[in-house]
Length: 108
Image 1 (cartoon, one colour):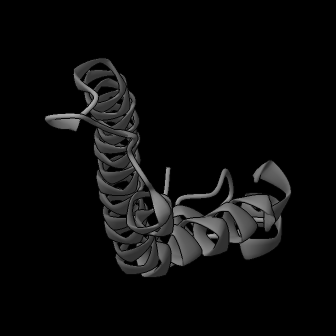
Image 2 (cartoon, helix red, strand yellow):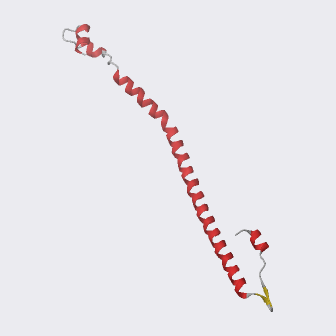
Image 3 (tube, rainbow, N blue to C red):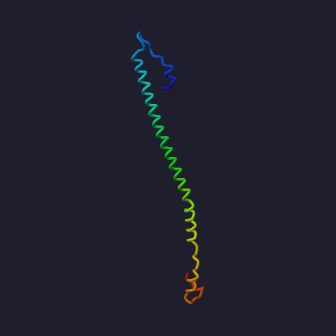
């Protein structure tokens, strides 16, 4: 029911005024229509609120992920370093079997 429906409404007139039954039926239909509209508005407002909250949460998670990325980028670099062959420490090279650097490198 739209406002134009109420403006265009013409209730039947009896000898002493409007027909009580017609007015009661019309008012009942209007009250049902307004109640349904109010319920729909409340549901839609609740849904908008839920979506806004979800969007805010998503933004916060994105910001947290962006601030966490630099530390995550450092970890793959460490993983790359782990794949490389380790350097022979100079102290360990000196402690080789015969004190020979070549023997210490072979032991590694």
